[in-house]
Image (cartoon, rainbow, N blue to C red; front, top):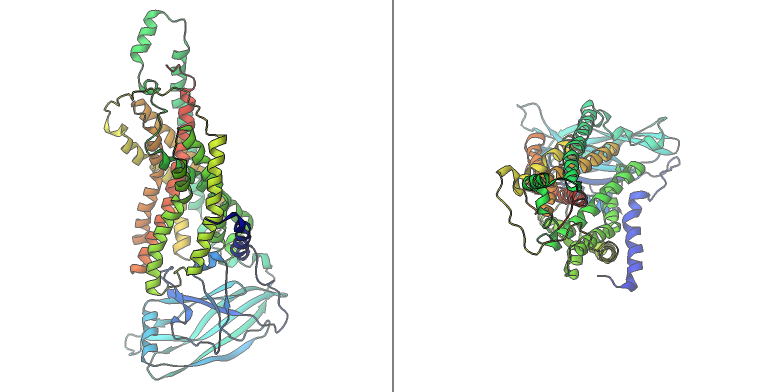
Length: 588
């Protein structure tokens, strides 16, 4: 934990380090005629395995003479596996190059073997120019089956650049002149540059990377409409069925002038949720853990809403790693929410072990992600991939947690305990717990928990396809307005479904609703993870231990956060519902 003397300095330094690349550029993107335009090489790897990336010069390409400059990005760029190195290819603003030599590549046996393996695995590479990406493949397989040399290496790079006045608007890379790979052969690696003027404005230069047809297809709009109709149905179900039943129950309790026969009949017919009023507010088991996950889930809900709004306003898809950087910064700054919700909940239920509660709330989700990340990082280091997180970046992440996130979480716990921690249960808890009668299998907590996630998953099913495709198949996700609508729909559906499940459980005279309401909503993540397995085998061509471990590891982190978020939303919604229905009955 950081001391108070260094906290302010650490916070300032960290915020400058991690946020500046996301919201600003090292350059003003303005050029004069004949100004040098840097072409940065970034990474190379199998096209079907997006996370299996390596340093560009892991393949025996032409290396620039002397010490090549590096362009260091922010935290999100490093976590995204980017390492920009100056190619030292001579590109000048508005100056065409017909054909120039990069270097002469002498092929020996190890180089030929490396290039052949890369071509067989469909290796692609990524360059950057003025923060705009360029992509290309290392080579291709000769379509002539009778040829002895089926591995062809592209030897010429044709760079086309469009500009508007003094700013670069678009860059494109095409490759030509494939040559067979033969030991002892010399290949001239060449390039050409062609400049042309355009009237596209600088603010719209990223539009070419956005797949409007894919993301704004009719099926996307239909999914939003379908989810919206589900919201109307569920809210109608809660208001028309449950509230009508509750209103009838309230009417029975409100009658004071009934005759003896009516009262006896009402008492004999009394059953369900009314009978457990003396146990329904009994503190749940593992109260420390439940308060920690509910507090963390409340923070995740605020965090996701904040990141989506920032993405809508700031077009975060433009910057390399901007989304990751924003997520980390916002997570640290919203840690107060987790502490406040957890502390208030723990105090209202009579918790005494405050140290354990504060530490668990501050460290639960980060350390779970750290455990998964540690395993993935070990795999990346073994493979020598750019996906491996450098030690310095780990130190920065730990400082963010230790100097910003953890103190805010602990402070929130203290505030929550003192401001919203007073017990206010509508009914007094009885000393002796009421026995829970056996009910039909579909009214057991386990079945209610498993079934509770189906409808929330159904409301986000289509959006999951677009999110997965964006992350795993090179699509730039930019429709954050859709994501905001889906997030709001998810919250509403989760609350409604959890309330219905809680009501059924209480009617079965089972008062262990706290954990059931959490798992009922959190089970949405189980269905998302099952969908990810389907997506992996049906929608992608990923292969190999590296990519498989990263796919399911990243998906596990995502589903972990989604499950905690949905569980917290469901529990908080059910808590309000339970307090509301027991507020107007006569408790003994």
